[in-house]
Length: 274
Image 1 (tube, rainbow, N blue to C red):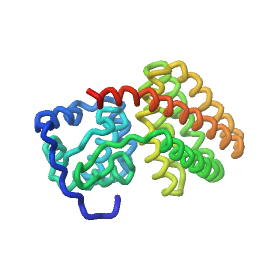
Image 2 (cartoon, rainbow, N blue to C red):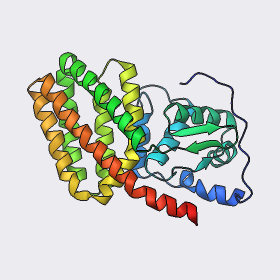
Image 3 (cartoon, helix red, strand yellow):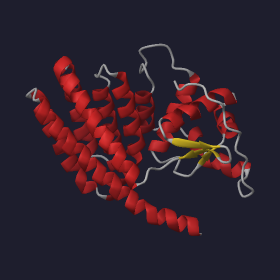
């Protein structure tokens, strides 16, 4: 949980924003959670059911993070504490803490004037994000292959068939299953700083991976092949080859996310001109 910091003044709705329009924008919070959303939330909540229920603030943060990752809350959208607390029937205190968690993971940004706004990385941000992701994943693989090789084998045996199945369904299902696969691998690492950073990075980029795959579904089979190549290297216990395969896989994901951003920017610009 993030350290407590002085809360920003609550953002005042702009004249063109009515309570009704804001409620409509947050209506996704009231929708029955689909399987993909539930999977993302469960993966984000620490303990994954093994311990007592997570604090309400973490539950709210996981719900909002899932909505952002699945594009139900879009970049630039403002999140009002009052609206969220009304929709979820909770006090504003855990909502405020949940927004701080999202700020820590850079899914929202806070300002004194506008309050919380859903963020979106640009190309330069993505280059930086994936450079860090590549380095962290190398640290993770070296440690896990050395210390927990059998557990890593078990994760691949569990998730690789699910990934292959998702590849025959929808690009969104495949993107989410890849996300869950990555989180399962990360959970084997004993370096919690690496785990937390990789989870936050994966969540920030999930939206653009989804968009990129939806635009170019022919890339899904190539992605499966890269996962298989990584698996083969892991089975050989070849750390250097595993890192090389993971670097190629992550590089391909970067290309996909950059493509998604380039394609979404013109649409966003048109929307601002209206």
